[in-house]
Length: 80
Image (cartoon, rainbow, N blue to C red; front, top):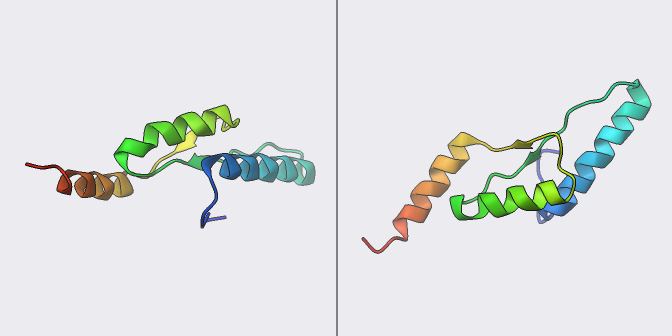
C-alpha cells in the first residue's frame, strides 16, 4: 500500500479503513493505519480536512522531508 497513484484522499481513507477491518477480522486486534496527507504546503490542510471528513481516524501521517522540498518549490514561485 505504499504507492497510491491517482487515488484521492477520500479513496485512500476508505482503503485504510477497509484494511484495518480486514486485519481485525484476521487477528482479533485493532491496527492503526494512518493516511498520508503530505503534499505542497498550500494543499496539506485541505488534504487533512478531506481525510478527517472521510473518516481518517485516529490520526494522519505527514513526512517532514517531503514538506521541506515542497516548501522550497513553493518559495521558488514567489515573485521576490
